[in-house]
Image 1 (cartoon, rainbow, N blue to C red):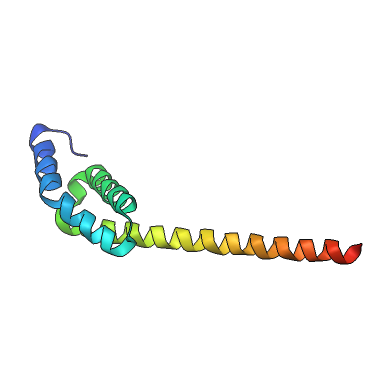
Image 2 (image 1 turned 90 degrees about the vertical axis):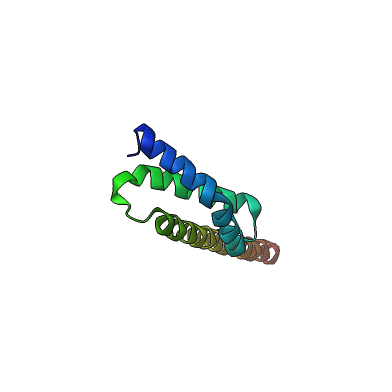
Length: 101
């Protein structure tokens, strides 16, 4: 984990140098400013937590950002599918009630 002054200043320099580009990349994959910023922020947190295990910080960030965007899309695909299932189930329930009376 990053803790000493040199590691923190390195992370700070990396953040200043890479944040905007990473957000642009995430935005190109999500089309949403807030989601893009959240994904990039999460990537920097993961980098901080990974500490010394990371050999190439920029590559790690890029990979983590892309994976975060993919996770976002997968999550929203599941939410849409479940929502559609509830709508269809509600229509079927409503049809039965009308036919029962």
